[in-house]
Length: 210
Image (cartoon, rainbow, N blue to C red; front, side, top):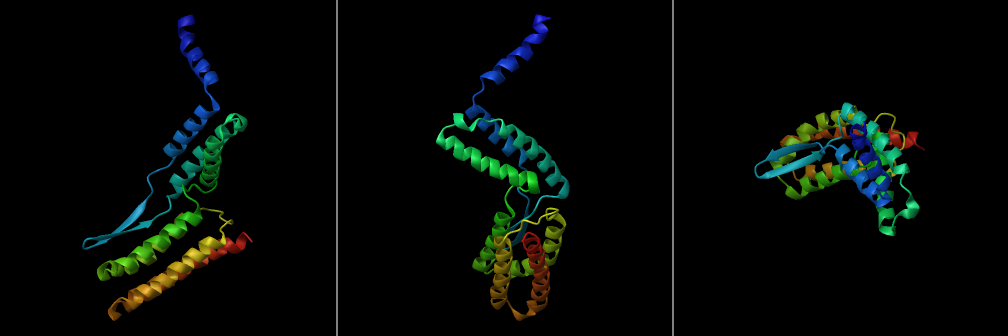
């Protein structure tokens, strides 16, 4: 009987001896484990490749929410008073990231995600690769449709930064069009219409949250 229960007591003693700094490291490990590899759409033309960020599929987001909620409970058990100042900063950052993940199932905030989209379009403008720009314009309506399908349900806390980032991308579309041959007028028109729909999605979240 003693032999059978020994492993249990070992685990109990190890858990009891674990410091709050150790618990923080374990929480960080669990957070990284929850995160899936960021999904990206790759568009290639010649030697250039452009990556567009993508939100997780609904089923993946739901799983992340559940696991992040459990991690939140674990984090609440860490005694802040026993942590050093540097560890307190790590705990604060981890708690905020975990809260976003538990609420939206997204590893980064929607503001950060929106900025990543802007960065991708800025890169497209810098590359000035006509075939790549054409691919981007032709793909944009489908890209927006996927974003709409994967947009976190019940998002009413969308803030001004998300709307601004979407508007910035629309301005970048206009700049790209000035560098592109006239025969791509139709793909650009479709891309603009699609992106206006996305701006409307961002605005609806912002207005609902205010």
